[in-house]
Length: 380
Picture 1 (tube, rainbow, N blue to C red):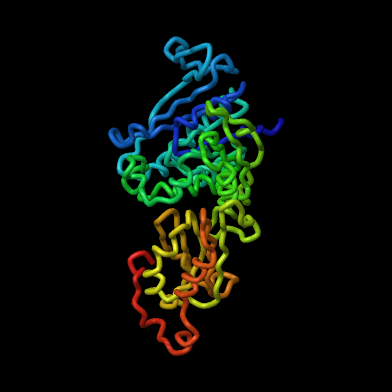
Picture 2: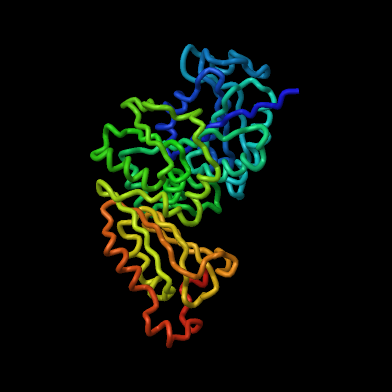
């Protein structure tokens, strides 16, 4: 008996559902169906709604449970083949979405009606946890083919530079979701095989945006849209997704080998030190460090926590630290490594600020490190 062929799946993410619609339409080729998940009713009814759609007149075989008259058949546009909702409640919306999507995807694959599936995630969803779950839970049924992210050329720098919480826009995926817009935007871009740059014709410096996207993710291919939002290149079924490569770049520390050269106002700084950071000086300098930086990631060594690896991450004006285990659990000696990207960023200024946070040569030999105040006690 011939082995079952995996169904390729494209993940589509992006903060603007309006900009995503023409991109999704371009993906709905013959033999393709899409699960479109929306979060419009999450705040009021605590549910994520979903629709199974295809392009009108391009259906290979419609679901037998669907009444064509009630499904909204049309000569053009989308056809809704099925619909439903996932309950979220007070839980993590992303976790509930992943848990509920698996049986739905299994059903679609088992029916064998479709040669390609698209999963259009809700605006505040990141592709990484979805892709990781599909790779782990459905390795014989689904092959993640392409991760596509749609960004707005007019708002991209603003979205990456602020500190507005998703909750302030009513876009958080449930009560526990405390991410900000910059963090979400950066993570969506960092994991994408294709970045669709919508509204590029309205942007003052589109080439700078191309450069910024490639600095945030050197793996990505940037595809612009025409004024109506239709992409000018291939955005699905590219075969570009590489799980190991995506994880390596989007992990705690971006691979230094992939860093892009500085160009057209976009700068990426790689900062390293074999000396630890003074926790109080680092805390006092947080605002200065993230000024002009749209995204930074790394691992740092705090003097008052000499054995602990500490994750560093910033997006926009927000920075966070988290525990990563012990240095002894790795092959690396204790050190600080940080990669920061910004538009109009002054590398010398940033490096000077970070260097000033390190223990001095005198402090290395005379200071009792454990006696230092711990401003990060609440998060580490």
